Length: 188
Length: 146
Image (cartoon, rainbow over all chains, first blue to last red; front, side):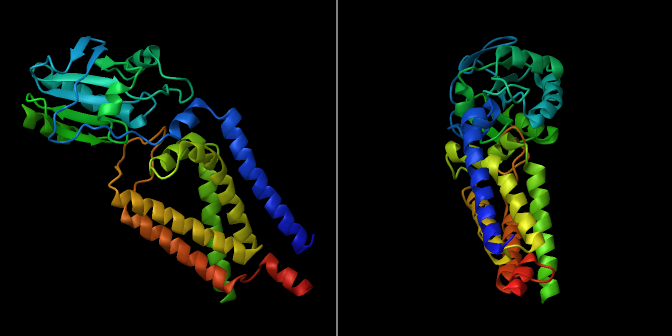
């Protein structure tokens, strides 16, 4: 094969890869791929600012941020997120220790289910609660309103809201027990 | 010098092949990582996430083989400078770089160390481009033939 022929073949392969990718995304791309292609949300909740109000039904009754008189520990999670799955152990430990003094609520924030393929659903969140032995109140939010208010670009986003309804701690990632305990103690 | 260029070609080419192979078939994870940098619209991120691993493998194979070496090396320079630029922009804009989930898999953390790493790889690619093709290159056969 001559150099010229190799050059033509190279260009042809590149064109096939590029066009093939566009066609694949347009016609065969999964729900997970389409969802993952969206830039992650950064909500308006900010440290030191008034926490955005929300009301949501949870596995343990209706949660109304304005109505609560205790500090609040809020998690925005996704059932497919391995960090959120591991964080359940940490939050369960905190819940056991602080549930009489702090209101806990975890709210779903993704439109993709645990299998990375199907759309999110109430059933998916309940399966996640069972699979990871979650004891604290959990809410399925089909509108993702709470996530849009609080997400800090990734899952999980963890928020502590003081009795004054101001955000006293907010971060995203797999946060340690010690750091979260310190944040809660500061809000008490 | 020819041996040094050969070593650089095989090193950089091998890195690209491995990097591409690890990402191939994980388009959603790669899309989440790219989307996390907030530079491209979703309509571009999706196809890019599908194509990029195979383009990297393709580029790596050409560098290893020493085929169209100069062109492949310049493409690698542009690629690594673009990566460094994207990571630097994330650091400057304080985009959260942590161990959390930007998408259905982790995103590469955005820090200056990764910027330096990618710029280093761009420098290696630049050296290959300037002193191409190096030893044991398919390009040498074409030169001899002509």
